[in-house]
Amino acid sequence: MRPVLFELGPIEVKSYGVFVALAFVGAWLVLRHELGRRTDRPDAASSLILGAALGGLLGARLYWYVEHSGSAHPGDLLSAAGFTWYGGVVGGAAAVLVTARWQRLALADVLGAAAPALALGYALGRIACQFAGDGTYGATSDLPWAMAYPHGEVPTTERVHPTPVYETLAGLFIFWALWRLRHRLSGPRLFGVYLVLAGVERFLVEFIRRNDEVMAGLTQPQLWAAAMALGGIALLVGDRRGAPAGDRAAPTVA
Image (cartoon, rainbow, N blue to C red):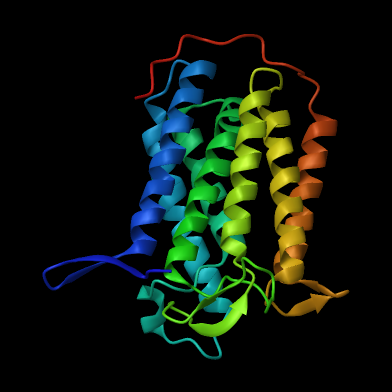
């Protein structure tokens, strides 16, 4: 891991910020392409991504702060470590819904375009966690690929599961699957597939994470992940539109 990617004189460029920025750029490119294919509004991708970024980061940070209210202090809000993914999901989703309504976009189109974009963004974002060593690694392990994070934002000298790597690989697989399905499913159904796959992925990885159990032997992220998967199943069962009617001309994404 490498929390400080490089230095420009007295300025330290943190790997977390660089890779989070790359995650949003990757998600923006996919979202722009898919909005152009599904609608005639690829330009709306910029406002949607900006809303998702601000809402997601604010939601993730505030949720983490509330969870750690007994030990955190206001200065921690500016730290590179300490983001809660389900807080980001809630904050980002709320911001996207507001932005989509403001842009007068059909929710079905936004859902279909957002599904692969979210999967890619999450996969790239977990690279930021790996480089920063922000404490999202797993339990101790003696597997050949286990590693220590002695210089991370939340250091450990024990060899542990590199769960950010696992989640990056899983996220890339989910992105690939959604990309293959995007011509065959309606927007809500494609988003339903995303919720199921992302929920199952996070539910399973929690078994080797370090989060505390809160109910029925499950961690809080697992409860959120189960809710995501159930929401995805509801979309798959409830949407009757089947495959999209057709693609509109889309601009080339450089």
